[in-house]
Amino acid sequence: MATRTRPKPSAVDKAVSRAKRIALFNHKGGVSKTTTTFNLGWMLASKGHRVVMVDADPQCNLSGLVLGYKGQNEFESFYENQPQRNIRAGLSPAFESRPKEIEAIECVPVEGNTNLFLLPGHIRLSEYEVSLGMAQELSGTIQTLQNLPGSLSYLLEKTGQRYRAEFILIDLNPSLSSINQNLVMTSDFFIVPASPDYFSVMAIDSLTTVFPRWRAWARQASSMSVFRDATYPLPTTIPKFLGTIIQKYRIRVQAGHDEEELGAPSSGTPAMGFQKWIDEINSTVRKKFVPMLRREEMMLDDQKYRQQGIEKDYCLASVSEFNSLIAKSQEHQVPVYQLTDQQIGLTGVVLERTLKSKNMFEAIFNKLGEMVVELTSDAVGT
Image 1: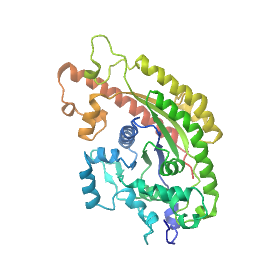
Image 2: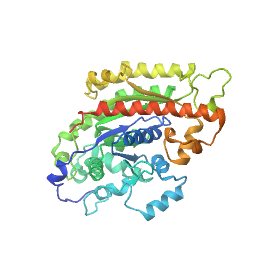
Image 3: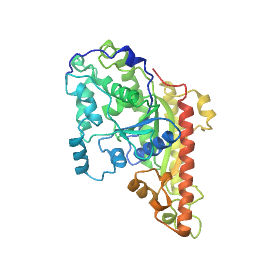
Image 4: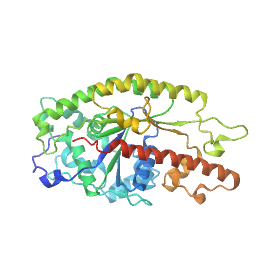
C-alpha cells in the first residue's frame, strides 16, 4: 500500500545510540525459539542489561507466555482494550497509509524483572506480508512502497530508544517470509536454534542458499536512493552469526532413574540417537553454513569466537529437554531456572533431583548470556 510523505526523523533521534538487535531464526519449527528468547532475555536483564523482546511471530507464543494467555479470546480482549500496544499497530502508519509517523510502542514490563520488556505480537501481522514482499522485489511500483522495508527497523529503533534498551531480541516465526527476511537482514546479529533431527539439518543446509539471496537483496536495496532517502531509511547493517543453540534432546538416563521424574538427568550426555543428529548439525554448520557466511561477510572475527571458547561447530549452548519444568515455567511465567521450590511443587528426593536440573539450566543460560554480551561488544553495525 502507498504511504504518504511525512517529515524526516530528527537528527536528535538519529544521534541516540540504538540497541543491539539479535534475531532468533530458523525456518524449521519446534526448535524452542520462543523459549530461548524468553530465557536468554531474562538472563541478560538479570545481569543488568535492559532488554526488549519482540514477538514477530503471528502465533504470538512469546506474548502468550509473558502475558499468561492461553487462548484466542484473551488476545482479542488485549487488542480491543489496548489497540496500539502491539507490533502490527506500530507498523500501521507505514502499511496502512496513516497520516502519522511511526512511534515507539508502549511495551509490557515483564513481571519479576525490571529490565525486561515485551513488544507484543499480533495474530494478523502476516497481513502485511504481501505489501512488504512487493516492496522488497524492487519492482517498478517501488516509489509508492518505499517506506515499507525500513519501517520495521525504524519501529524497533524508536522502541529501543524509549526503553533505553541495550538488547532487542526478535522471536521470528518458522518461515522464509518477507518479514523474516527483513528482520534478519536488518539485525546486527542472529542465532540459529535447532533441534537434533533430520529436519533441522535440512533447514540449516537450505539456509546456505537462502541467505546469499537475502544478502543480495539487502545489499542492492540499501544502496538504492529510493530506500536510502525514504521516511524510514533501510539500514545498511550486515547481520553477524553468533552461533547455534541445540536443544530439546533427551539425555542418557542413569540406571534406576526415571528421566521424566528428574526433569533432566545429571549426566548431561545426549542419548545416542540424538547425538547422531547433533553431530550432523555441527558438521553442516562447519562445512557448509559457516563458509557461506564468511563469503557473505556475516561472521564475526575469528578471535571473538575463540575468546569465548566457541569451537568450529559454533554451538553456543546445548540444552536438553526441560521435561516437566517447562510446564511449570509457562504456568508461572518465569524461566525454568527461576522456579521456586513451591512453584515446582515436589518434595523429597524428587525435588532434590529436579533442583539439580534447574541449576544445570541456570548455569547453561548464565554462560550463554555472558557469551552473547562478549560476542556483541564493540560489534554493532551501522
